[in-house]
Image 1 (cartoon, helix red, strand yellow):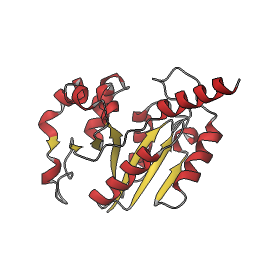
Image 2 (cartoon, rainbow, N blue to C red):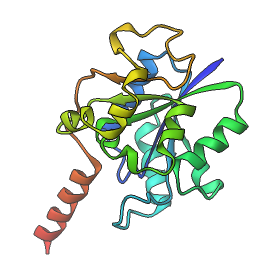
Image 3 (cartoon, rainbow, N blue to C red):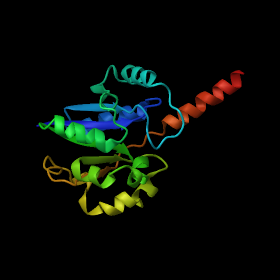
Image 4 (cartoon, rainbow, N blue to C red):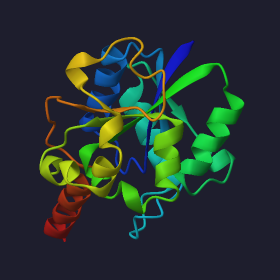
Amino acid sequence: MKKIGLLGGSFDPPHKGHLYISLEAKRSFALDEVWWLVTPQNPLKISKPATYQERILNCKNITKNYPIKIKEIEKKIHSKFTYETLNYLLNHYKNLKFFWLMGADNLINFHKWQKWRKIFKEISVVVFKRHGYNNRALLSTTYKSFSNYRIDSSLISNNSFNNLPSWTYINNKEIKVSSSDIRKQRLLLKGNKN
């Protein structure tokens, strides 16, 4: 069975942190592919992102030399929520094993996602350490709710994720970069030019 890593997000803009966790997941879990699911609009983000087409183009440019596919599934099915996207994927790709990839920052607020418990019960989840967020992630509602299903990252084997719920917290090298920091730097540069 083919194994696919899914990294969802606004990718506004995509950066080396997204690349790093995608490639780390591919290597660590022997994934056949990593798909970036670019969301038309993240319901938890209020500020208006770059246009969808700009973000898709930026994702294609940054991944062109890497084994990462840019997927426009959320736009195609008019999905606003991760559980809707996963429902579509799980029903349309019965012969694939999916892994949801995310940073520790997402684990902190995961309990605010629509049908978050359902997501954890229907797909294996891989959480990557992220600078400045790890302690709060380890105290999060989701971490506590699913702590019994956590697989120690040093004990992962081929069969570790056969049963659901199943998830792990990777002790990875931390990349100190974020899309929001990049956007702030751009605004500062724009302001200095005026």
